[in-house]
Length: 109
Image (cartoon, rainbow, N blue to C red; front, side, top):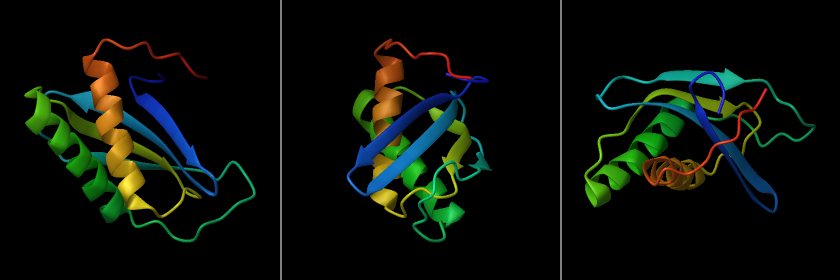
């Protein structure tokens, strides 16, 4: 956790995403924050609208399943992440689930 945002990284061989979400209980238009490439790989351009839609879909699935109002106020991604938007959907869902379950989040610097 950093600056009120919860983070998760997901790595599946050559594909990877790092997602940060600042949660809110009220629906809002999330701020999209792109962070700099921290490694030498590049997977091409990421579409921020598709990232936002993917995260929104993951959180929508979470709300439908558990009836808990969690929405993204901020969405953080890394500019060289993989353009596999389904990964953003899945990790958004998992991040919300972990938070709602009272899971631990380490502080990061």
